[in-house]
Image (cartoon, rainbow, N blue to C red; front, side, top):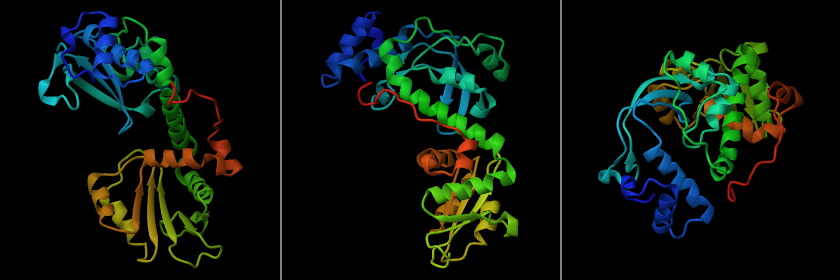
Length: 306
């Protein structure tokens, strides 16, 4: 960050590049145009009244807002976000509400861009008659290369999440989870056939399943947040020497998370964490599981050199 009021610079990209070079002399030469270009667009190309689409990774939502204030430089917050614009946030939707193509187009945005192919989908989803904010200049080649890896990773996570929710609903998710734990090195089996009172998968390191800890796993396939009562009911079935693992394709309420933190042998895995495990151990999954969520390896730019 330049740590200075960008509005005082000439409205030219080269001026922003020179300012960044002076402020960060140790920065890589190919990173300066990227940083300078982002701030230039933020200061000079964004307009009051523009709509903003913000993909929020922490809760997998897409947020829709409107720019309501000009650029300001906040000297009170130099360490974090000194360069600011006021945005009125209008609403939010789960990423799963959008088609894969729309998410891919959104994921390609590095700074500002014009939504073309799926503009109508975003308008309909957010029920707003105004056009999606337009990009007045296209991203530079440097910025595009820098974001390729991030875009692919996000698109892959979205693809996996949707496959889980469409192809692994209900009891179909249990054998998949057992396969995942086998890929992690456990002996694991789904227990639905024996109706094991809410324990969907049992996993253990030894062949016979007699050496502690035994992992007792419950799986929930829905978007609603899991409340503390559900987690407590599950934990009541977990013996002291065992480990309880609750997996949901959604999320947990704050009270459920708080309860889990108070128990040393209880682990909660939300939808995002579940997807991360699938990505990490995908190559070790059995053939049936890999056919359900079909991925292939591709070559992408090295993030260190992009």
